[in-house]
Image 1: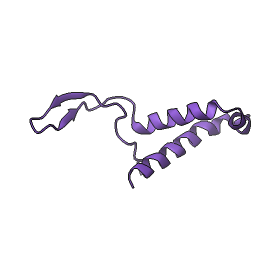
Image 2: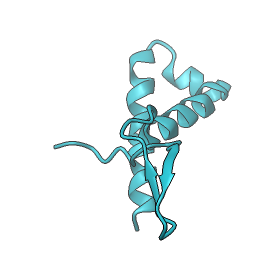
Image 3: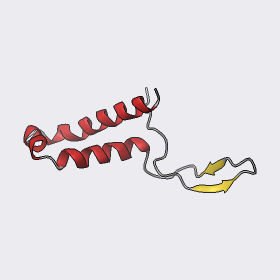
Length: 78
């Protein structure tokens, strides 16, 4: 099952329909999920207490950031 990635984080309009609807490029790069995970990771890495919890378990930091990103995307959909 694919995770909801939230779509493009920073879509770039390529054209605007007469109705005002914006058409986006097919691939704008970073997804909203990646953006949320990156922001979460930056926050986690800036806190000394959190760093001490993950010390020696660095491979668990990225999955934790993505779990938080997934929760953020789920919360937006409510």
